[in-house]
Amino acid sequence: MLEVSQEALKITGELNSGYHEPGRVRQLLAQLTGRDVDDSVTVFPPLYADFGKNIILGKRVFINSGCKFQDQGGVTIGDDSLIGHNVVLATLNHDMSPSRRTDLHPAPITIGRNVWIGSNATILPGVTIGDNSVVAAASVVTKDVPVNAVVVGSPARVVRTLTD
Image 1 (cartoon, rainbow, N blue to C red):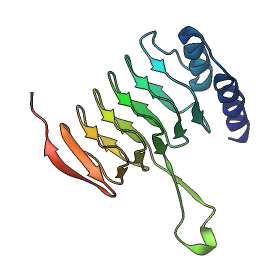
Image 2 (image 1 turned 180 degrees about the vertical axis):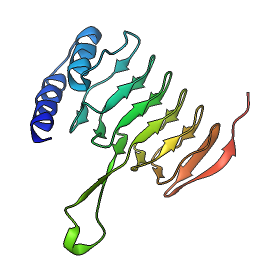
Image 3 (image 1 turned 135 degrees about the vertical axis):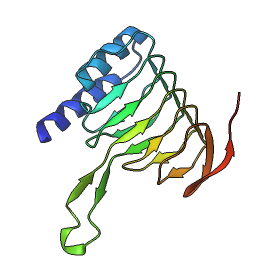
Image 4 (image 1 turned 90 degrees about the vertical axis):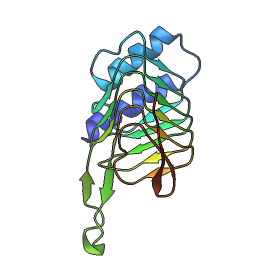
């Protein structure tokens, strides 16, 4: 695990060290994730990931600058999703017991298709965000978000259901 984390730090260091053409950004993302990244994916660095190999990006995904992915538990982002500035995807919790505080408890984050996550939102371990949903800026998502929902606040709560 430490070796893969060090590789992720090296790759994100290069990704974040100045301007790169979009194709080069996707090449670095492919190295980071260990899988092909579709030509339709757009990322505006800096992007931080502390593992990398557990990130799966769909097609036409847009990730704005300053995002932090703690992906040991797994991060999946569905097609056509938009991730705003400075979004944190955190897939690890520490144990609540003081004597076991350094124990890690991973749980995946799954972001459905056509989701919009606003700037400075934080998505916590084990959360699934349903297709077409919107997470308002600065929200802290602690539990699953239904499809077609708009959630706001800390903790995030549903305030509206979207219809076409």
